Length: 302
Image 1 (cartoon, rainbow, N blue to C red):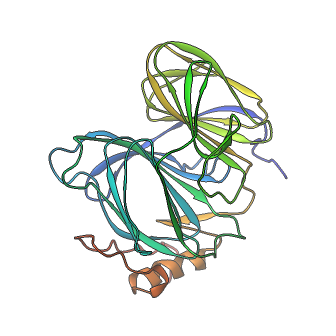
Image 2: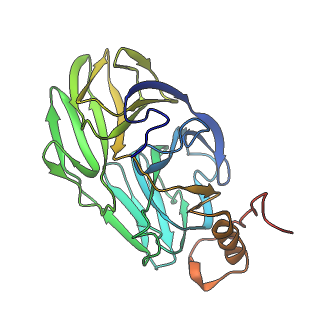
C-alpha cells in the first residue's frame, strides 16, 4: 500500500471537532470526517452528542433518512434513544448497549428520544464504511444488550466492535477494525496495546486525559497514525473515551450527506431515489414526523 500522507507512521494530529445541529435541534460535535482526515481504518464518521438536558423540548428527533455503503454504530453514556428502520425494527438503546445498522445497498431509519425518558442524553454515533464486497448487500440491524468488558491496568474497557484484549464484540464487521469504550474511575496511568499495522484515533467524551503526552478534553480527536505497539494514557480524575482503529481503508471513498459511495454519479442517484421515494430505501413506520429530504450534491445536473 502506498503511503503518500504518512498514515502508516506514528503521528499526533489534533482534530478540532465542529459544532453542528442534528435533526430538530440536538447540538453535536463532529470529529470525523474533516478536510485533513477522512477515515481512521474503516471508521469514516464520528459524532459526539451531549450531555444534554432533555427534560424540556423534544430531545433527539431525527426523521426518516436513508443510508448506503455504511454501518451506523450508536453508543450511549446516558439516556435512551428509540430506533426505527425500514426493516421493521423498533428498538430502544440504553447505556452499555450497542445498536448496529448495516445499510448495504440501502436502508432508512429514524432516531428519537422516547416519552417518558431519562433527563439527560449523552453518547456517540459512528459510521463504518463498507468495503466493496459488502456495500451492495442486504440491509440488516443488530441490537446487543451486553458487550464484552475487561479490566486493564485499572481501566474498564468495553469492546464495541472488533476484537481487543482477547475479547470479541458480537457486532458484525466487514473489515479489520476495533472500537473500544475506555474508562478511568480516577487518577491512573496505563498503557493501551495497539497493532503496529493499524491506525488509531482517540476521543475523550467525559473528563480530561493525557494521551501520548497530549492533553485532551471533549471535542478533540487525537489521530495517532500507525506504526505503534502501545500508547500511554494518563488521567487525573474520572474519564470516558473511545479508541477507534483499524487497517487503513484503501478503497477510494466519496461521501455526500448520509451516503458513502465510490463515484459522484452514485451519490447523485441515491439522493434522487430517496427524494422520489424509491422502494430501494423502504419505509420507516411509526415516526410521527416527515421524512428528511436529501440535498442534491453541488455537482449534480439541474
